[in-house]
Amino acid sequence: MLRMLSCAALLTISFACSATDVVQGGEQTLTVLSSGGIMGAIREVAPAYEKKYGVKLEVLAAPSMGETPQAVPNRLARGEQADVVLMVGSALDNLVASGLADKTSRIDLGKSFIAMAVRKGEPKPDIGTMQSLRTVLQNSRSVAYSDSASGVYLSKTLFPRMQLGDQFVAKAHMIPAEPVGAVIARGQAQIGFQQLSELKPVKGIDIVGLIPAQAQKMTMYSGAVVSKSQHHAAAQALLDYLASPEADAAIKDSGLTPLPHTAS
Image 1 (cartoon, rainbow, N blue to C red):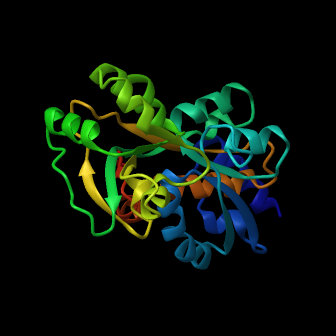
Image 2 (cartoon, helix red, strand yellow):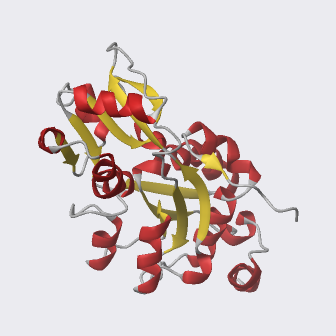
């Protein structure tokens, strides 16, 4: 017991203890609230992590923002119990400021970029330049985008900057509470935009590619321990693992870009 308490203290101060030390003495269950943009990464690492460290991960889908009751801020505001949040970094900063997430635990995990998708088997239009993207947007029958970070940027910044006109505004729709890819797969929109890491897991679509660099906006995905977590040390150990070279392959497979690691 003394060793367990000692490791918890060290993790809080210097993150020096291993996950094995933290959970010694019995399996713990960590509840992880994960945004879709990093869901692929946490689901990929979960089986190996659980086996190696004896920690069970209960991963729940939770958007970083928006009006849906499942969104991370709304879940925590109504008192749902959780240990770790994985979400858009700017939205996480709001949780930290409100005291719902532990500031000292906050860590960046991967970069995400916006991509476009069409229904599986449909032609993939050229979106390699700003002009070609503009042409695709104006000629499309319907456009879908998310109610999270990428969609807010598209609807509030990029689309207005491109001056696409009233006809475009009428056919472009924000999709709440579900992946944009699912709407595309059902044929309810001709083209859709979301973070690449959120489009990759969706069946029934083809990813056309990233939008041009001049139109692009990077979104950082980050994690933190929930302030009211009863498993603070184990939660911090999971975050440290996700930020380590051991998780880079899962981060990359999910569609995110891993961050550089400083030599220890």
